[in-house]
Length: 239
Image (cartoon, rainbow, N blue to C red):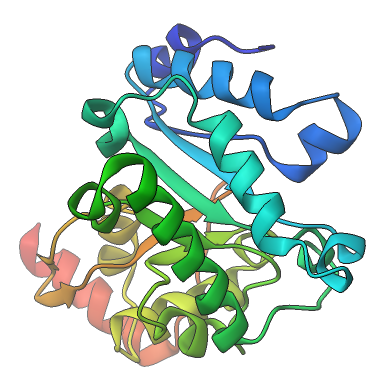
């Protein structure tokens, strides 16, 4: 509630993270207040990314699905079926955020599958199949390819790795299946960072995955000398 939807859209923001575990832990966010924030965000023209996920204690007690179910029920309480297209779900096991630990790809996929099942119970299968379910929790260049290959994981909520240009570039490379990242490709990718349908950007085909990242500042991605020279030559010809 510190920042209104109007303030965010006023500066060009299109997506907002709701119910992150740190908001729940340090700012008293509850399932109910997360639901009100999500409804306000959607009503204000934003796409809301609702975070759900269990603590280590809940995981060890076998309560991960029950925890996510309660968070979904509260978070989506004021979201009607017709507004679901403006909502994404991010599964972020609390014990994996910023710790370097991550759920195995298979385990993350299992929970995301359960989340989709819960959405189907509430909104119907067709609507549930259209919801983007992201995985967040120490996704990095080493595990991104396996995680993003899972059938129920539609993308990643990238935190720490987005602050490291080399790591973030590596995730993009593995996602789009290219080895050469020119500034043009990267700039266009960032402009279309949430891809809802296959698109071509600078001749490269981008598939279904959403990549959402928290970033402050200007990104400078590493390129090899040959790539930089090609880009310089291309710009000079255009000029």
